[in-house]
Length: 461
Image (cartoon, rainbow, N blue to C red; front, top):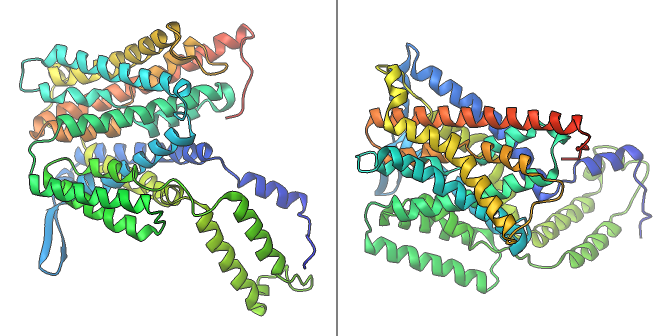
């Protein structure tokens, strides 16, 4: 049996640096994604108003055909992004929701109630404010636009403060945004479904049952869930229910239990590693594994063991989240944020759609979130996280008004007129910018105020 070779101090530090909790891994990806979203959005607005604006419209509405044999589906590039790629976004949202409910910040009733109640308040008040301006008009369908929070931008904004804010505040904001995403998906499913095709809906139910049975039978082979997931997406898309709902439904049926326990993995990994013969004269060189093929066999065995101890939910989330954060969401932002100012006047800012969205995000979101959280805490239903004060909650509530991704998505479901879409995009961009700037300025002012009074100590993020 090989001797155990101790790591150098540098190697120990590298291992420590590369070890992330699920929350840290998720938070880091969202922060970087927010930067890409910003670049994509600014690029889209610039292109849509440049001398090449017609090429932007041509690209967005360029037909793309996906075909297999005699079957084919043809739609525009923008629709493939919104109805196809965004289903993967909602799938990862579903995976995140399931993980948080099982072992994360939504795992216990006491932990979950504050962000959930805050999310409900943050959806009701903006919707009501929008309806104050648009009730009884043809624009009432857009009430769902200001109810959502963009998790990437909101976490990106709070990351600007580094260690200056309590860790519990970041956790509250992330949990609130995830609960808010679930609420937005339910709104899409219940209020933005135009009509139902029963045959496709029955097919979707059959595929969902197949996913459930595979889970019950302890099937852990990912291709089974991938094939059934794609079939569910096609059936739900054909049923008239928005295809993105399929993403969350399938995600909730992905197994969250591994093939065997961590303890068994550790024992197996030790046996595999101990079988690898250590030769000091060559093992520090890159070609050592070429000279000793049995080492490669051991590495493959260790890789298989890693796959068996990792749950399908974790494997899919880690595999898909970078693609969603760094490709799909920037593509969506680029395709949907292209607000054209051609023909717009200052009066456009006073259009009921624009006003309803701006005030819904900038005023309704913080008012709804903070009020609902206050009621929940004062009635004893929930409690504030450690070291988090009400001034922190107010600042985070303002960041909750950054709607962007979900708001733009619901805009596309609410309006089909280019003019109304432009009004809604103007409202989303203006409301999100005001909310982001307002939240950052308020939290910065609050930190300086608390520091002057000796009320804060920097904490690790």
